[in-house]
Amino acid sequence: DQLRRQNILNESFFIDCTELFGTINGQRMGTLQSITVEWQETNAAWGYAALLLFNISKLLQYNFIWYRVIPAGSFSKMQRLEGGELLELFASRDCNAEWKKRYDLAITAFLKCISEIGDFVNSLGRKFRLPFRIADEKIEGIRLNRFGNASNDTTL
Image 1 (tube, rainbow, N blue to C red):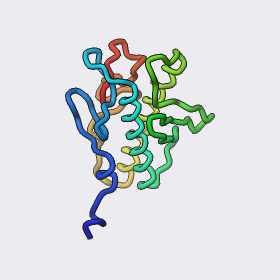
Image 2: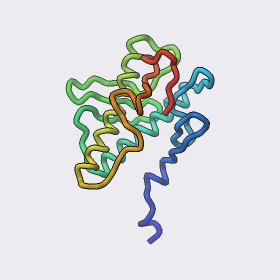
Image 3: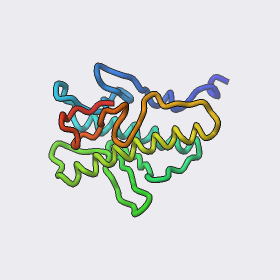
């Protein structure tokens, strides 16, 4: 009985806030000018987040409208359903301008998928509200895009 009551997602993905950062399984999502987070940690966090979003969509039997989530650990991607363009949800300090643009687009795609899931759950008649308002690449009006952000501060 106890096993049946367990929520596998709660057991597999620990989401928290440490200092000024949102974390998933202890990995910080983002960086600040005053606190540098290495790309390996941020990429791992995005990998966990991609796997969680992928699993939620499968549990709900929901197919995304605009993008496909491709969980692959620290090398996860988003794929545009129309045209198949791959957007890397990972980066490094020496990636080129085109890669940086795709990385920022991948973040926007990820947020769009979260919004879709929220809308889908609401359409089922469940009273559900995402904890923060998402619009394009912004959560509560704060831009998450790492390279399209003048201050270079990005945290979840």
